[in-house]
Image 1 (spheres, rainbow, N blue to C red):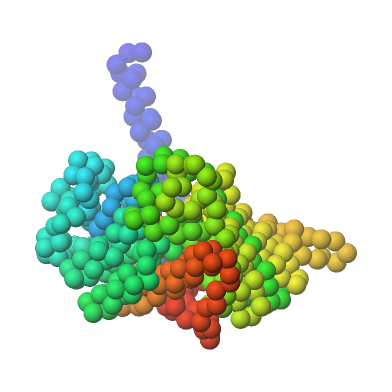
Image 2 (spheres, helix red, strand yellow):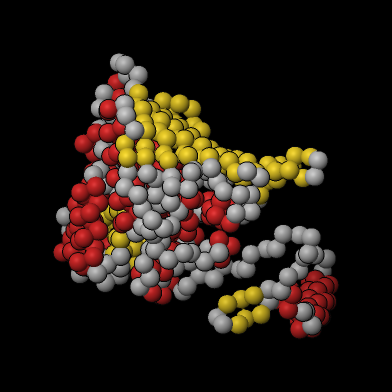
Length: 425
């Protein structure tokens, strides 16, 4: 093709493109709001675009601008922090990662580069004076071994920072109380990271249990097991972990019964077991089973093990329905099934709820509490209640007898204000 012909072809192509763009602009100007959305109250909204027979789509995410988000430092950069918590900041709407606190400088520097944390915002465990002087850090997320939670919480509170602490809260009720007192004295929030209480499927099940549609819940059955290896890891050291399967994964079964019902148990009866000669269980229990009795008549049967294949399920028995909750305590894969009568047939309904990052949800809740002064839904008192019950579980297992617990009147006595509907989480 000659040069004049090539130039002519380019002119024609340009003209055609201009006409197309002009047509597109005109077409866009005529587009209805159902396709373009509308802005109101600082949020983007799209009208419903599917038929009433379809599940409605959630509203678009409405993250705060980075400058308005609450700044967090993550203290402790082990497996949970690096695999789940740090990535969750990328899905958060209200929180941002501004600092790392670690006893391993090279790891902290690497993670800082990967997650956009400034080099001068990488701290050691003893750098509390510098952390106190860093205004970008409003809250500290503590992800260290259980026995170290108290020390870090007291230091963070003294530095004027709010505290989000991983579960279990501590290794003794005395340490839990000291953490609560320190944050109260410093006028800082203390929230325990009970991620399941913020997860939409767990919250939907709570609504079903408390709503009365299927009658009173009378039976709760929960199993949380995983087959652990590496006998040298800290979870097998009693001085660091406080126990074995119970405080790590059995706690989900315990807290789930309290969270779903809102009640506090009046009695616990427990048994522990460890395989003789297994080097993993020289100091801590391999397996725990326990039964909780509640004032309403609800009975909770719970089992947790460090020596069985992964199984994280929960079941609820009610007069008009049986509910099976697969992967109830896992990070992902939750699935609710409700079996009930449908005329002359038995219907099994799959309740499909959109998945959300549990760690991002709890970060956002803590950030909202810091920004507004609201008491967290899972404050230190929630962790203290679980710790006291776990201590009773160990006493029952040691004596072979049931242990009575103080009767507590009312629902959700250890929790902050109720959360908004789960679909707004």
